[in-house]
Image (cartoon, rainbow, N blue to C red; front, side, top):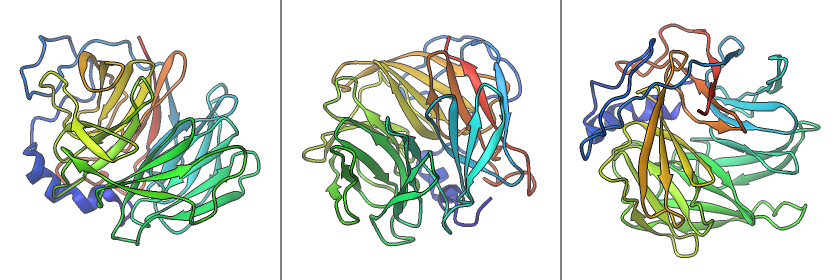
Length: 332
């Protein structure tokens, strides 16, 4: 794993912050449904169908972000910085980029085929043309090793980015085909309930079902927050006492919120209220193909999750070059 990986940097403090050094879920086999969790417990696993497909990744490609793209394409980012494209129909993959000297974390593709790429501890982001692989824009949000630009979501009028080290969100206004200039972004301080701690803070994000606010998961506290995009004020989302241990990527599909629980190798599924102020656990998806997934992409029928094969005791892969893959799992 890359020495600048956000996970290796935050492992020790995250254990202390969450108090979850053991009991982090089942891997390698099927699970059965159990009773609704007590307040504060992680979601209980249910019994979804087996994975329908696995897409192997190149050697030494440890994945992080994932996004659906034009046609039948999946784009996967890596801790080494590279970007890899998979045709989900044929299963064939090609390298898009070897990176820009830093890790590549959260990614999203817009309707114009532009790939927005976060660069973690480098503190910046790039926009790539998926047709030509040319870099269209470069935005430096923060200082290297001070910021950790972690994930992004594309809304109607803006791209938003989380910073796992600084209590801010970055807004990149989008209007028409032209991208903003290098300094054309806004830094929005976060106030209210979301208070930064030691370890991994703001991580995955998405919009609320009504599109009026943002949902941000804080890994170090296993909590979900609603953030007002105009003021930065945050409130904790009421999930009925359900905790989100080792939460990473988020994906909103209508009123259904998917939350990746990395070290549990599970996906928690919630039905959210329109304003995103509350949600109820519907089920938890577990599959034998999942091994420390990070983020999630969704299409009509399937969930796509990149697997890092990280081990909780060391937060490293078992050996250099350990094969990684993307799991394609039924949504049902």
